[in-house]
Length: 290
Image 1 (cartoon, rainbow, N blue to C red):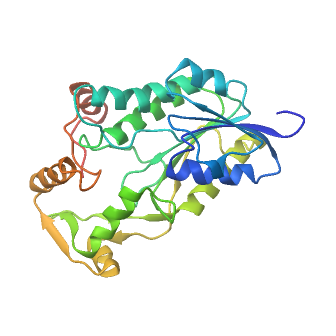
Image 2 (tube, rainbow, N blue to C red):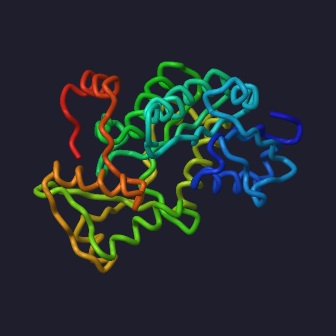
């Protein structure tokens, strides 16, 4: 902490939640300086006199140098969707797993890791079982385990699906597609929770403040950030004005990947790499559910 307030580190400020979190931190009188790291430049509206932004790979030496000595670190940087072409999965693993390990090496006084949770209802002590078709979730689960082994004052925020006026345009376009069809796995009960972006940011800020304040019940714990209720496929269709399209699991995954390949949406089911498939199988003992 400087004489002017907390020194806060933030990765992923150019993303949906990271951008909203940076805006709230910039308005917080208790924050003296913000050190931001992201692959892209900050938009002009997020730059300010207390913000020092470094455009760098989160797994790089430059990222570590920018974040060293912060009082609290919020790690939100991630590659959510798999890229295309040779080396795409390796690049995604580097951003999500190696990046998380890299920034933790700066040994912040306190740290908050955020990632989406499994479909709920589930409690904080529930063992996550990332689907093998979702490399992003697998990467975040690996990163969480690595952070837990590293010690220090840290907390994990598992966020429900976040929506709001600042959501990624690709996500917003996909959600609007529910007006036409809500995909579902035939014979499987599914549920989703929608969390407002400002509630997600408020939860992250509360965790960071509690860690800095030395609250004894926070370090080393997992917190679900989600509303108390959830929607099934039929509920989503009713709200959106669409209809449920139920398909066998294998057929739905093939359709999802075909749609992703057409670039209509970023969502899909790319096959997992051998390393991740082996890791998930060894960790969970069996194939995760959808």
